[in-house]
Amino acid sequence: MPRTRILLRFPAALPAALIALLLLPSCGAINKMATKGVANSITKGPDVYSSDDDPELVRDAIPFGLKTIEGLLASLPRNENLLLAACRGFTQYGVGFVGADASEQPPDRYERQQELQERAMHLCLRARDYGLRGLELHHKGITQRLQNDPVKAAAEIQAKELPMLFWTAAAWGSAISYGKDHPDLMADLSAVKALFERGLALNEAYDAGSFHEALIVLDALPAAMGGSLDRARKHYARALELSKGNRASVYVSLAENVSVQTQNRAEFKQLLDKALAVDANRDSTQRLANKVAQRHAKGLLLRTDDLFLAPDSTQTQESSP
Image (cartoon, rainbow, N blue to C red; front, side, top):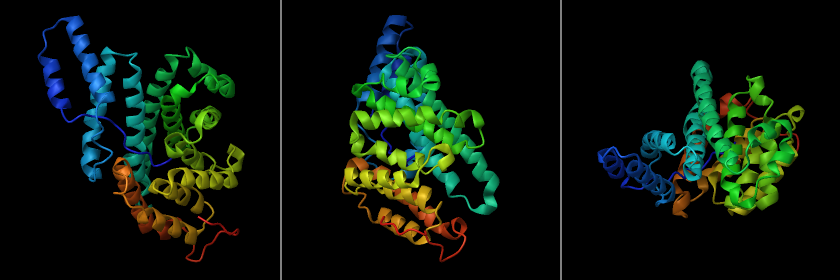
């Protein structure tokens, strides 16, 4: 799945709000009202993370925010905004930080890479479950229907549910990509594909082409699993167009998932150089996401010799990243 953007919403006053909540009298109605107030602050308050220019600061802060959301969900288990925030947040943390760490491990740290991939998989499964709970609010039983008849089940989801659809699919697909040695997960691939294709049908331009960016990874899977490198490149081209070239993660997705697979070293370097050339400050709402993607691009460049069999390895067919 793509190098997802950090979109969690935690207002600067959140700690104070939590302290106030703890100091309230033990009246169930009052506590529930206060809990709803904090939940609204988290899910609807100003975004204080995506414009940050310090990925490590955000990385250290996100776990607290995620556990806060889970604590609130214990009291408000059917709060749609909290379920979306949990699904999105665990996906972003699992892919953008833990999964990225795994892919940047050198060959002599294989065991550490496996540990990180396993952790990233579990974080994404956690996210998927929150997303499915969110979809279940309006489509009771859809979790089972997605496994029995995924295309028909996905067709139930409407445009107003696109955020929940996207992050559920992103979480599920990411878990599959980290857990390729788990046959039970691989069996869910058709459900993920149906969700993404439903999203494209509803609004292919959603979030500047995020469905297309996600499908770069899905279509980079082997042909026996329904993948197609030709389709992956078409999704890349459309994601690039819709994002106007301002999203470093689009370049990184093609480089990591297609260029490495086809052993096209020249394309790999060209794509990652383009990712690093993106002006992370051009759009403050994309600043953190671009910095995270660019840091990952640097890590991949350092591992170039580990990822390619020979210095002059090239793709047999010309491509234009």
